[in-house]
Length: 474
Image (tube, rainbow, N blue to C red; front, side):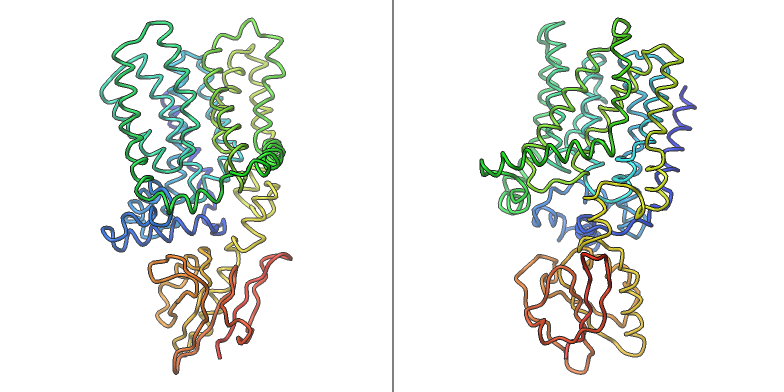
């Protein structure tokens, strides 16, 4: 079985790596990577740059470490996410061992993982949602493992999993209800033990570190995170209805196939043995579902990614408990249900039937980096015979994307009319021409205060919704 698991892990890496750099750079992704580059350049000075920008630093720190080896933060961030996601292959196998599920559970669950369109889409970009899912999943599993087999090494792994989960994104908290139910069952069955105190201490020590960072940088974090949380009651009620609709809509696109075994389960309910595991996963699903719907003012499909693992565990568990022939048929149906979407995500993302909100971000508005190649080529042509200055508008997809594309072009100097030299946003200001140097300004999301005096050179069409304008500064 171990050889099969390693083979499936290799297949996971292979499938998820196909055309990984063909996905356009995305605005939020570009922000994390731009800040990570600053850590690589000056580690001591910029070690806390994420917190200074209101972002928890765990993922950025990991990207900076990998960038030291790859030399390119975009490749580092995306490959890091793929390898983190691939660890779920081994996690599923270990869940099967821990809960003594049928042998076919591991293979079925891993195949469902590989075929997950939501995980495939989000693990090929350098965003936080994959990594927080991975570390949350591991800390839930390690808690259950410690209760059965307490070892010092497992306590250390649990500490690191909890620490990085909360250093990456606060929604790591959605795994805690599942942990509490695991501990509560053990207390009920075997009484309160010193083991539970050690577990609690592990969690407290791990969470204190990101909590301390929050207390020190609360103003910056609240300015960023607070703007995306709902606080007004009337707005909350309206937004919850909207978020509920969106969650159901996105679930139809990315997750509905995992509900197929539930159609057969009622006919074989007497043979279902692993209800404890299913309840733990269901508690996790409910926590994510309620948390995402009730808290998010700005809600995107990737925010639901944490649903994917518990859904796979329940689906694969039920399939492995059903009569063998029926289980194989259902597993096959689940895998092929979204195979067309998987194929298009890897080979032609722009034509893939992903959620409209995802398509809007990647290909249709200011967050999209699909035009970076065209803009880079134009600026290269303009700088062939003379040095030029290009003012950027402070949108991260341009600030990071163009600096990366043109880092070897010594004739182009970049400035920003919305960010300072350390990439901290400030108020919009005018763009100024330097004496004897041809100067341009690029408008994506924001315009300089003297935009009316600039001469339009070229428009780069993102979609019918949006275009990016290149101006000559007179």
